[in-house]
Amino acid sequence: PSDVPSLVPSSQPSSEPSSMPSDQPSAEPSSQPSDEPSSEPSSEPSSTPSCSPSSAPTESPSKPPGVNLFYPEWVPGRAGCRNDGDEPDYMAVNPTDWLSSTMQACCKKFFGGYLYDSCMGRYPPDHDDCNVMLYYPDWEGANKGCVDDGMEPYYMLTNSEYFFSNSREECCKKFYEWDFYTCTGTLPELTNGEYYPDWTGGSSTTCLNDNKMPKYMLNNQPWYLSTSLRKCCERHFYWDINTCLGTDAVGTEKWFVKWDTNTCVQDCTGPSPCGGIAKPWDETFNNKNDCCEEKMWWDLKGCRSRSA
Image (tube, rainbow, N blue to C red; front, side, top):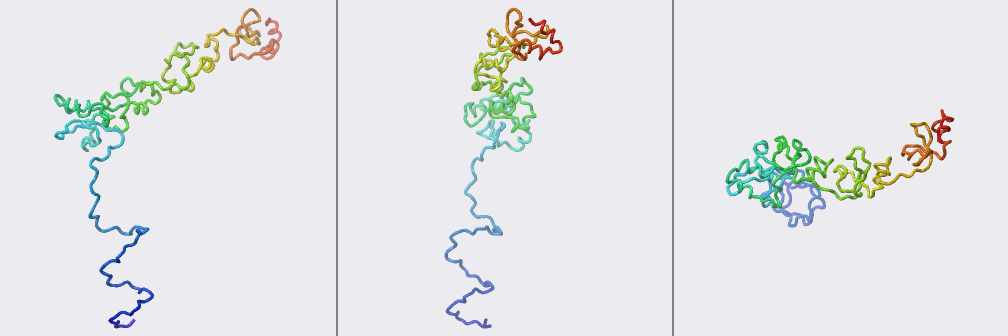
């Protein structure tokens, strides 16, 4: 280009842009910004934060998940016990001194005397948004379920998220799932029938349907419960099914070995050659000879002579 440019620009701009940007950019941006944002964010953030942050934070942050212990609050007009998870840090790090699993325990500890009723009245027991007590496993008591008496061991207060639950059902499912219905004091729907084996007598061979089955059977209904007496007897007392059913035994009249006499007898009741009803484990045969040959082969002649 010339060393001294003309005072007036040429009537037509150059067909190509200059290789170097202008030392003095225009004072104003183009009249219209681009219709769409760039596909990539800028490589460097702005050096100053936004001058207009969001209008305002939420007035009440969301309640922390899980369970929250009760803590004392002495704010004028709001004195009492709360369990909203907003306890001061000094209370949170020393839960055995400051936190309680029930509102009653908290009120007794920090608002005794004439202040107790006022403390307890802050959250009526039927308040939808407040659990006035938490449940914990009663390992140091009867150990049969979950309780909410506020007498939990101190070590549970140091790990409240693990040991405490908002409801008895939650606590029972977590710590007594193997005996859930005893823990909750409830009965499930009987989906597999009402007959169950009665083992209370030790040698009993009876099935009952009095709705008094042990709770552990309710946890495995498909195995323990049956829809009929016969099904229950066949599953649990197959070796003495007639006694279970309460019926007279009827033999097959086949032959089996009676080992106390080393003879082959018939599966029936009455005079010889009947030898009583065969047990389920006794192998039976169609005739005496087959029985002696299979079971008493070393004394075949004696078996045949002794067997009527």
